[in-house]
Length: 385
View 1 (cartoon, rainbow, N blue to C red):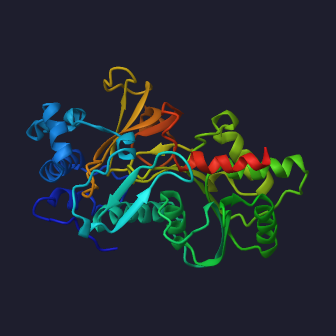
View 2: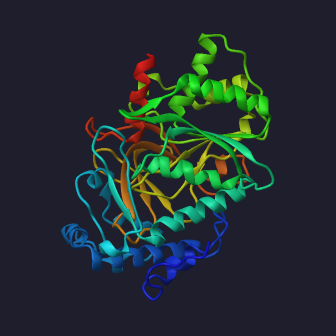
View 3: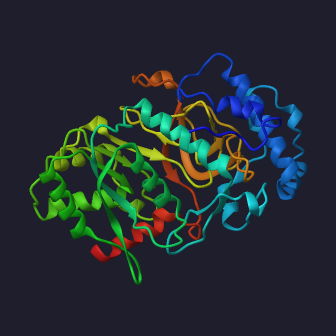
């Protein structure tokens, strides 16, 4: 995929950073390049977003103060929730290549707009990460089960967009959706999912399962409660989850428990059971290693901030998850404070071959009104509770 930022003269360091095709290779000079790229990104949005410029003026932020990595904490962050109430843009309408929302059938929606660069650069990173883990395999067809929304005309949901994009990494034999589109909206087709899995097991092709963990867990629970015979899917199958348990946190189980059930009931090896993290407000992909740790790729930085003072915390301390990346030129979202509570770990503490620090999600501190697509999706489970 050959792409470039909208203005190479103003974003040369951004271009250089995002040309690096080894996502976890902390190469010599990376930190210096990252700071330069963030400085270019902030300058870009200061010139093109009046609201962002006013916010930076209020915070007395001077982009010239950014000289080294520790200065990244000085950049004024935006709460992810702001995109639920304001349409912030740093580009004209004619440059919008994609419009995505984060919410499903209910709840406030984040409105995110992307120019070609802002959506294709994270996609290219995802390409590199899938290649890094050996999941970009065009040698044989696979069957797909997507625990996400069956497409409808004009659909803009970020989760559906992502899961359909993931189908390019192995040739499609067949695709089935768990959340079927009906005349009254989407409905979780539990019995259709079970029938599909049984058919996939008989066919013997590798199976790729993407989407919300809550729906996978509900499927596996139904296997257990009705004593359905466990399946033996092709060992080259892959489970790649995302979206979290928001809205049904009271029913959430640990990853270890979920992965154990998926292995026992579907026959998928633990190393082929992974979770992903991302959002429409911050599209850089974070994917678990074989030890189930989210490693931070070289294209972003993660800070953890105190929930009261917003002071930057150290390793091992719980606070708000703060993402920084210069990838986005369409919206001033290069520094976003999420509603998720997280803790940062040292990459050296993980025994996998992937370098880079890690982070773990430990909870959510959002507001009831600001529900994401995962919330409205899990509401569809009510028919079976």
